[in-house]
Image (tube, rainbow, N blue to C red; front, side, top):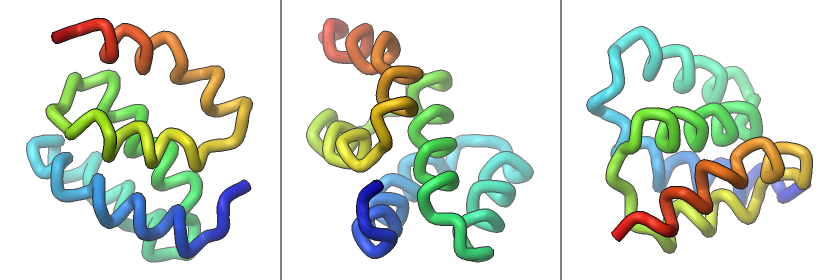
Length: 87
């Protein structure tokens, strides 16, 4: 697992792109992050970005994705590939 400081930095970098999500959904992510769970918050944030097709620079998203454990990468791999194939 990536160090918490790297995960937290990635979360902070991606989080502003998700302002279009419903308030409750964003608040849940922020609550988890503020409660000391940056990894899970980042993982869920990436899932929300992929599932809601939120515009995020590809390099920023892939840098954050690289911090995930293999199991989580596998879970999101098809969505990442689909997104990479879309111009």
